[in-house]
Length: 133
Image (cartoon, rainbow, N blue to C red; front, side, top):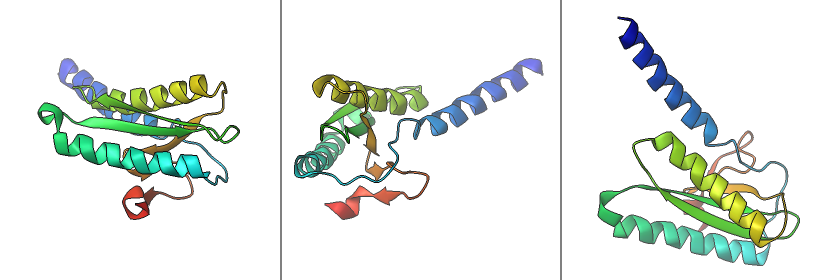
């Protein structure tokens, strides 16, 4: 009985931490995308659509798009979903932030979009990017 309870606790904890991790790296505050960020966001959406159409052997992907408010920079990252589904959303976001910070020599990159959802200012709003095409 103890092992059953322990397994339920571990599974429940993993699910909760994965959901909380989804917005851990989201940017906050007022933001207006510049022209190059808007263009990159458009390509990012097309990239997701192409990846979903190709479907890479039926595997699912998590995507993240990060921006830098101070430099106007941006970067994106994808990770193939694994058995640890909660981890790939974190890895894709961390990867996009790291790539953005390194490329634009800054430390202020934060996630603007995860998959097709804007998560910047997540506490205030959640918009789908599908309508922004």
